[in-house]
Image (tube, rainbow, N blue to C red; front, side, top):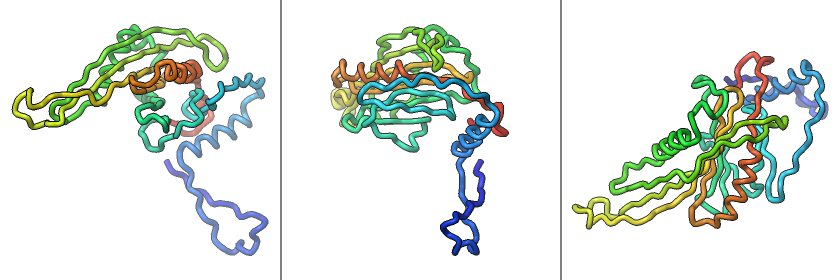
Length: 252
């Protein structure tokens, strides 16, 4: 929903008081954040401040208090607007390396923890199927090869330092294509590697929703470098509950 309100004039512009005030249009997220801030300030008892965890060099904190998650992201990565995900960042020095957060719909399955997806291996198969569906191509002569590199359960901590269950999944997908899509025989349509990627997902649950941190990079990238980058993001990724009880409309 979009809400329109009148902007109050300032004391420094008394000569404009006779002019009609200009409307200010507030988006759903901005309005929700304002309402939540004012209401929580008035109704919530003061709590001790949580200890601030300083990000490692080269990273900066990203904290979404509307949807309920936080993480450290590389400070030189560029945010991509309108990607269709909750948030999307890409590495400006590597076209195939990016990170985004995806959150399940509040009207879909209600989650308690990632185990609701099955075992880590079962969850990995579901994630792989989703990736292959997203990478599906209508071109002739395209072939995808995929493998599950690893799938494991990990007990991390939430924002209060309490135990929290995560699933960590690593996949590898390669794409082969032919330059001659209309060759009559297979010999006329030789395939060559067009890309080879490592895709990692970390799954957590809060607000009865599934939060997925996705990381993608080229398999040609230095493994020690990208594992170090993703390790910081993965370990700092913490979904958390958000209080909607004081709001007159849902944020999601």
